[in-house]
Length: 339
Image (cartoon, rainbow, N blue to C red):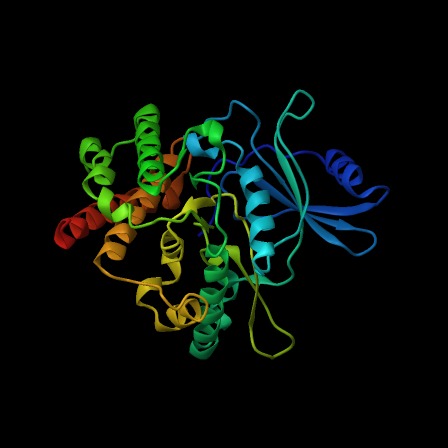
């Protein structure tokens, strides 16, 4: 997909060099190149004279319209990368994170750069055998991410009010927040808001089956997976990037972010990799219900964000149709699965 959102303002080259020197000392920036694909934060590839390559991410300045959960996303990304690295997952190293303040108009984050290309960009070159092997590696990596236990369920920024001591409470707050965002931005919903808002209570006993706040990336689609290879050798999963959407909750929620790569819960290669780390993974009726709830939530987030981000053209049209169909489809699935 092409980023058709209205571009966010970017910092100048002098500002980029100043930030990098503040973190690394007297280094020379030889080039700074915008990276494509980001629909909220901007990202630049920063190349140093000594050969190092870094990524500088910058959030929109304070006051830019955003969803309730989108404040402090780069702090969440920094937290995700640190925790995932501690679990043995290859991610960019966090060099510096700085929140917005009196002298900093916008939050920013400096990371190391992972060599390779995204899965999305490499897709045409992958054989079925390549894809099967990579799906297994991906399952292993995301199971390791889920081995990290957070201090609370929900988004890791208590000031947002989107966390709770238990998963039913946190997911209720998360879903209700995006419904409030839909109302605030005048976004039409394909299903009545009251019905959607009642889903966490209706299926609260299924949400309560989650008793540990596991780390969830929640955006591990093909554009956020970095692949690499040596010559004509086998492809490797070289890392996971863009952890800004992370939260603590049901590890099964991770499967939903993988949907553009195919349904993870029905993929034998992905499940084999995941179960090599978490043998007890269950995909019973309760799990299927929770997956449907998370698919409703993600589709609503994507639908609502289209207004404050001013999506345009074919992408906006596709998103409007897709999100409406997805929400309707998943609500119907929940009805068929029962309570």
